[in-house]
Amino acid sequence: MNKDYLNIKVSLTNNPYNIIIGKNSLECIGDELSKIGFKKGLKVLVVSNKEVSDHYGDIVINSLIKSNYNPKLFILRAGEEQKNQSSIGLIHDAAYEARLERGSLMIALGGGVIGDMTGFAAATWLRGIHVVQIPTTLLAMVDASIGGKTGINHSKGKNLIGAFHQPKLVLIDPKTLVTLPGREFKAGMAEIIKYGVISDLELFELLENQDLISELSKIKEKLLIEIIKRSAKSKADIVIKDEKESGVRAFLNYGHTFGHVIENLCGYGKWLHGEAVAMGMVAVGQLAVQRGLWKEIDAKRQKRLIEKAGLPTDWPGLKLESVLSSLQGDKKVKNGKVSFVLPVKIGDVKIFNNISNQEIDECLQKLKLS
Image (cartoon, rainbow, N blue to C red; front, top):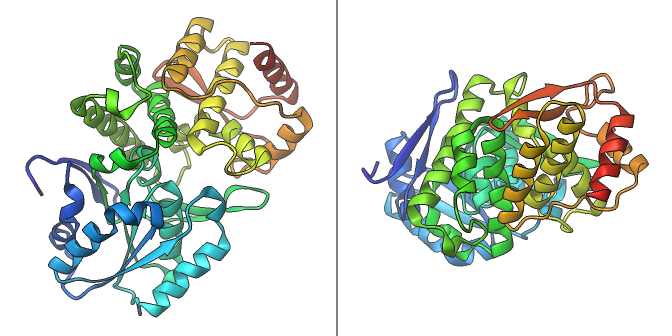
């Protein structure tokens, strides 16, 4: 590995792998695959969308060819609305055409949607083949590409169909963020703020102390690398402790329970995932204040930081009955009870399974008035 690259180890017992963070690392994907044992002549299906592949497809394919691999590039349409069974069928068709074998590899080149779909397709092709994640959005770099959660949406809810399938490698090249639309960059900042609230007070304060965090061009390269590293390590540390989400990994759902409601009821595409999570974090912050779990001043600090990142904080006008119905369709429901991750202080959260409908109603009413 290049000495200038950062390496974060995801030290799982059965499926350990590395997260490599480095400028221009995209050009070295072939070398990195060789270093972790992939043999020459390996068949590789690179899955991407046109927006990403136009910029980076040739770089990845050429690196693979240079290292004597046999790559094919497959293009899917972009967008959360493509994250469905039809798209998985298209990837499977491409896998068949490429004659992928059980020792073959899929590479996800793109954001969280491409990563989730490629990971799920790899998990289900020939009962499971290797996958490597090359995230090109900020959100995917710090969240979706790490931890092995793969899946697609069902018409009744987000990520209801999926599997745990750990990657063999996650390669993060911050240079790919240059071509990321500004709105997508802001959406990624929501997940970074999330890590600050759930486990990293220093990261939260680091972001608070910056003049501007809503635009890539205003963030110094050293700071960008630092926040990506801290966020990716936070995710890795939690995954190591709880690979299959039976305990602390659920902390990563902070802001997501309400966020998924927003995505589901408003329609995929109305709000980006990170935008919905941002509004969800404000909502659970209000729930925590109601319960006396954290102080109003901390809720305001969180809201200010989210606004500084250029993200929405106002709860959309959704009817209580629709919200409660959507919550019951969440994959985290157990015995009819919805699990909420609530903050107890900045840098620490806990899981609660006893939130009443009355509390949710009170929370949403206060959000409307704030």
